[in-house]
Length: 511
Image (cartoon, rainbow, N blue to C red; front, side, top):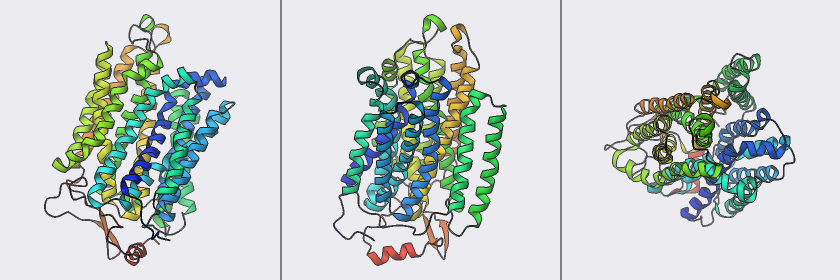
């Protein structure tokens, strides 16, 4: 049922969504710098403690598009409350976990909270005035990247002052409050795609994605030629082929593959994959480089967790600031140039981290460049996807974009780990040349992302239904793309009666 009471002001809605997205972003990265401490506290092995990250990665990758799809079908506000609630519950379980098995289970529960990002984008599209949509999406997108960076910064002080359990108590408190606020303040969704979630495509999607991510994660530890890794990757390929075939035949698909082939969607997704390669691996390996003891390895600063986090603070600040700056830039130049330049700046930052890391100020500057470019890119990618698809597919489309970025992060981290751990030197530490090669690889991924971004359509408009077929239409009057002063995606609520909204829903050809 569509709520008829007076709707919450969009600025209040944005505040609630921002808290939820920031909490999820922090949970993503808080544990990475302190895995050795978690290993010590829980009395487990290095190979086992890595599942604290892997379990979360797999869970978030599956549930991000699934939550988006559920939100499109049953109501984004309702699913948002559940996602935030489960994120808070998982954080509480992780905080009190007596052993690594419970910790891994808690991380799986936390991963379900990955749905907050596509749900936030969908709610913004539903609720915000048309001129405010692009700016709000840019801000929330950049907040996701900045939150990941701030997680690596605050992890050290939290652990040193309060203990590692507060890595989870803090997100639990903030996310729990966000869940209550979402329940009380965020309006119900007026635009939906009614219908059941198809079981077979959903299970096949979860199957190939789980096999792929576990195979990639195990590749750098067990060896890429090990039977386990080869078997997992082969299973992922078979299940993925089966998933595509089933999706093409079912009446109501889980992921609309025709939507995924839209030029603005596939280019944005490929850029997201390559950005994920650089972003997640950088978050994981920059602290290791900074914490390396120079008396043993001949490089590094011997920094503590807190000190290495402070050296990475410019990255988080740069990403956050670009969340405010990108929308005005795109109104002037369009989204495509901002994405291209953002990828180039991030590539320079990552390359500089590998080549010039002999003094702390050099790494701080490289970190800042990476964050500025990352923020610019993050701020525009989601807007490109939102503008390219119909309102009722916003959740699943943006969920897949975030999911593909996560897959890229798994690939980048695995390749980086293979490069770094495959070239050991004095004291069992990686050779300095290994870090140089690894960061140059990450920078190259961002250079390729800039080239892919050149293929983004110059002007992106939303997909529109016309006679049962969804088409990409060229905007008139030389529009500057999704982030122009007149965004191509109108709010589906503004100026519409309940009957007109229902008519939009009823025309969906998949219901």
